[in-house]
Structure formats: structure tokens, C-alpha cells
Image 1 (cartoon, helix red, strand yellow):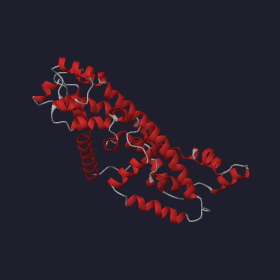
Image 2 (cartoon, one colour):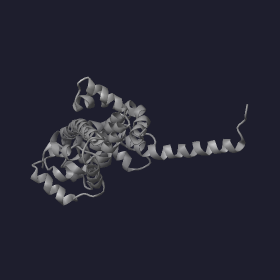
Image 3 (tube, one colour):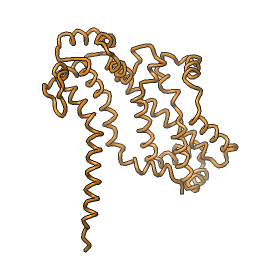
Image 4 (cartoon, helix red, strand yellow):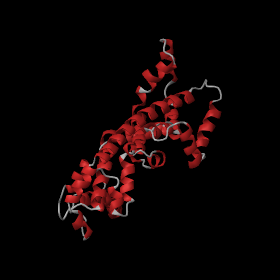
Length: 298
């Protein structure tokens, strides 16, 4: 039985030590934001609130959940994430399946055209003019339709589809299935890990994106919670932030001396961040398998 040498022990200790520091540096900002959100805002201004609330309160969250505009933004974010993810994965998978068919005439040229869009775009102003000409300004779908196709996700899907046995498709067509039947009855059910992984990445994009709504939407009732959070974080004056809140929340906030701009911002950030974090444990097992199986071809 071999013994671990002193050098191996020191190497293992160094690796675990560095990983511990990295984990702490990564997790601490999130933990501190949660601590500040549960701490008295006036007390937070004094400083020194680090690892645990010094003056625990739920007033910050009470204001957030009483603000109908913030809750409406939360609902908009949920609807956008669900619809955007489902439509994006479906449309991208259909495009990838077509690109994976060897009998497709000119598929190499189509791939080149798709790849070019990964490196070059028309820019913000042409995109704005296009969105306006399509009548998508100030609509919910402006946050969903423009990003419905991801070329990178299409390439991952296509690579995985090319790795599937050809006999599966041939057997299905002998049984009378057309291309749609092969895609939805055979190919997609076998693509579970890739679908789960890319769905999570797409959902994270839709949930965290605040820029699209800030450019194309002026109706405050259609703004997702991330855009409203960005407006709060960029508010340097309390009155600027109050302009984003409804009258009921303002009245309650006026009665609470424990709520400040920073504490309210941290509470809003926690409400906007936790839902997408809770999704990770359910799809974590698909990460390695999904990414590898979509990037390698047999």
C-alpha cells in the first residue's frame, strides 16, 4: 500500500486552500447583499455590517412585496423567461435539425451565413429601426422574438444531432415517419441533456437581461424586474427611486425609518436573483454530459 508523500500532501493542501479562498471571494458579495437586505437601512449606513444582520428587520422585503410595480415586473420576468426559453429552444432545435441533414443543398453556405452573424451585427441603431418597423416597440414580444435564435446553441444542437446513429432516422422513415416525426419523436427525446443545459443558459439570459427592455420599452407596466432593479441601483437621489414605486409602497416607506435606498436595492436584488438560482440544482446533473455531448462528435 503506497503512502502519500509530503509533497503530494502540500499540493493537495494548496489546492484546497486556493479553492476555499476562491469560493469565499465568489460567494461573499451575494451573502453580504442578503445580510444588508435583512438589516435596518439606517443602521447599515453606519457601516460594519458584514457577515450577519446587526439590526434584523423585514421592512425592506415588506416594501418590495407591497410595491405592485415591482411585483408586476417579477411576473413579466417569469413570463418572459418561460416563453422565451421554450420558443428559443424549439426554434433553435428545428433550425439545427435542418442544418444537420446531409441531403440539404447548400448547407455549408447556410452555416457560413449563420456563423457570420456571430461576429458581425448591424449595430444598435439599425436594430432599433428594425424593431420599430416591425411594430414590436413597447410590446412584450420585443423581449422574446429578437433573441429567439442563438447560432451558438444551434451549433451545439447540430453537432449532437450529427452524432446520433443514422439507423434511428432510417428506421423511423421505414415506419412511415416524416422529418417532423423523426425530430419530435426520436431526436428531441434523445437530446435531454443538451436541451436541459441550453435551456438553463437561455433562461439565465432572459432572466438577467435588463438592457433590451430599457431600450425598446417605455411602458413601465411591461418592464421586467431586472430593468427596474437597474433603475433603482442607478438612482443617486431618493426621489428618483420613489418615482419607480407605487403610492401604497411610498406611503408605507414613509412610515418606516429603517428603509433606505441601499437596503431596498439589496432586497429587490435578492428577490430578482433567488428564483433563477433555485433552478440550478435541478439541472446541474445535466451540465457536464450536456455540454460534452453537444461539443463532441463520434
